[in-house]
Image (cartoon, helix red, strand yellow):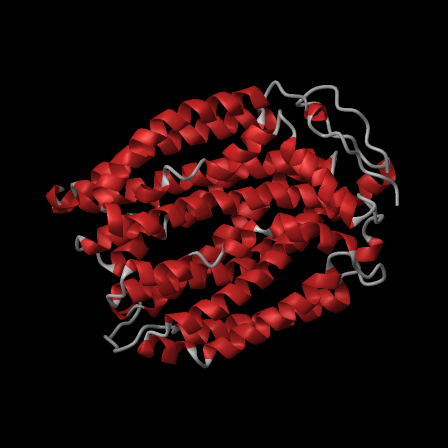
Amino acid sequence: MPVTDIQSPRTKLALPPPKEEQVKEKNDFYILLLLLILYCIQTFPRGIYTTSIPIILLSKGVPIPKVSFLVLSYIPYCLKFLVAPIVNMYYSKTFGRGKTYLIPIQYIHAILTIGMSFYVTGFFESQNILAISIVAWLDMTLMMLHDIVLDGWIVRLVSAKNSHTAAVIQSTGTRFGMLFSWNALLSLGSTEFCNKYIFATPREEGLIKIDQFLFGSGIFIVFLTVAIHFLMQESKMTKEVKQIASFKEVVNTLTRFVQNPKLKPLFIIFCTWNITFGPIHALAGANLMKQGLSKEAWLNLNTPNIPLNIISAFLVGYFCKKYHEARVINAFYIMRLITTFYIYGVIRYFKYIPENLAYPSVLGAVIFTSISFNGVLVALLAYGSRVSKITYGAPLMSAFSATTYIARLLGDSFSYALVDYVGWNRLAIISMVATLFYACLFVFKIYKLESTNPKEFMSIKAKDE
């Protein structure tokens, strides 16, 4: 299916044949709803292994360096752009390009999750972080492949008209996943929280344990996978287009894409923009808990953050339709920059803040840092979705998506690696100074993106199968 030239950076997308596009628009509601559910369950392992379990271990006195390997178990997501071409090239035409991988991945994930439910309590008691980390890395690798499939569905099954909405759905599904696997799990598992807000008479245990959540979610995934397996006919929903002829051509294409002098600086910035924020944002919870903030209070602070992020994701999607994505990215980046200095002040002087102002101060920091980070990611994915539909397709969408995880990984790993050697306060000051210099480069490069025609750095067009 040839792709027409792009006349301007914000011109309308080159569309497939009208009839096929009309069919896609009719199916958009159901596809977007399914994507919302799948992104939600895809986030369960990330919420459990990189957030919930680390918080539990930190509250039990486990040092940050020991937990860091578990926190960084989403590293496989950073490599998805290397695996995406293979996933999008080899598949069963009868079964469907995405279902070929999605069905076995979800069955294996469900088995792994149910199996983990029988051992997780014992791992906690023995503080067997190595065993938990092995399971986490294996499960996150499965979810990386799962994410590639969903990237492909956004490009192939969602109409061009709703490409920005797909980016919003991706963010919203992820937030719902974090709500269930982090906020709800730890809150409902907390004896203090349940006795205060749920139970009429005090009890010794919370409403739900982590092993029960793992078992229940595993069973739900089995039923969902069976439904998708037998009810969804992916091969009939869109004409399969072979976007790139061979694996060698995929590698050559992506290599030229990354090495293009106009796009290479942009790709590097997308991967590194979060490094200077890491020491303050990634370690905020651990530092506040060290100063006396309870685990339950930290959870309560993050709970209202979830619906606010969902609302903000839809607002970002609206802004991306009205303005160029570059403007939206810059606006939320500047918000994150301002929030960084505010968070540093809250953490640094938390013990001096009056008790009646402590909770609102931290709540404001949590809300604005999350909304600003979410805003940058949604706008970036919206740009990736728009450009991918008119160029390389799913492999390029996976490359854009991978940069969001690389940015998070570099920020977190940089923080966890240096905090014990440099000290948090000194590291935070260094990072804030570096952020000011980096911000000038970031805003300038993103601003130039608005006047850059994607045709200038997309030399390879889709080919008919």
